[in-house]
Amino acid sequence: MASDPVERPPPAGGRTAGVNPIVAPEYDFPLFADRPRPYVIAESPRSGSQLLADLLWRTGRMGSPGEYLNAQYTIPALLQRFGVGPLEAPGGMEAYLRALARHRTSPNGVFGLKTHFIQLRPHVEDRSVRRLLRRSRFVWLRRRDVLGQAISYLVALRSGRWRQLRGAARRPHHSEFSARTIDRAIATVAGDDRLWEVAFDANGVTPLVVWYEDLVADPDPPCRAICAMMGVEPPQPFRLADSPLERQADPVKAEWRARFRDQLGWVRPDPTPASRAEPAAPASAPASAPPSPDRPPR
Image (cartoon, rainbow, N blue to C red; front, side, top):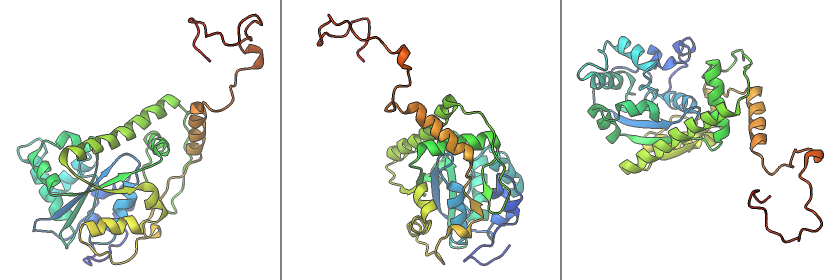
């Protein structure tokens, strides 16, 4: 691993570590023995956190932010790599967090973590996690286009593809449209976002808000704001081209979006055929007669 703390090379292991490259040793820094300065990226599904974390990591000065509370993929792999016992053991979470701080803190003392609220929730009452949160600065990564976020989340769930590397083959996604499933996906991403809002309010935290749409339009301003929050001067401008990650464009997303919006579009003309339209009121009925109590007003 390169020891230069200014700029880090693309991780070779990250290209072969499947959907969870953060467990690869290429993301380790030289062992850090002091107390780190932590920050937390509060995310919801498909909010752009992989891109943001990758850009910050490449400075060599913002730690290696990753989903370190992901119980399915990250925690088991890193417990094994770092030689730490299970979280269920007494002091297990504290030992895990210390190992993370030793291996994933950049030489300037900055440690980054990103997490969905649902990943944090099972551990929020652990004393070591609470100490970490109390000492952390927070970035709230959000997405204005909730429908696009939900459809992206649903496609990723069904296809198992959570990232797209530049130059890699794009495999088309084939799946049936389901408005009810999109409803549930919207509830998931919006619910995670609202839980962060409640948690920030409960703790008197004013996070630095970063919008996904601003990040993909020009990552330099939001990334520089995060660095400034941590007292870090980035070595160079942030550019999308510096990351191997690309947006996962998929024609099915546009199709599902159009169909879902069309279903909710009550301003469009009534599709009821004229032959089935309700007959007009009898000529003898007064023009101002109130609607029948058995039928709602039209």
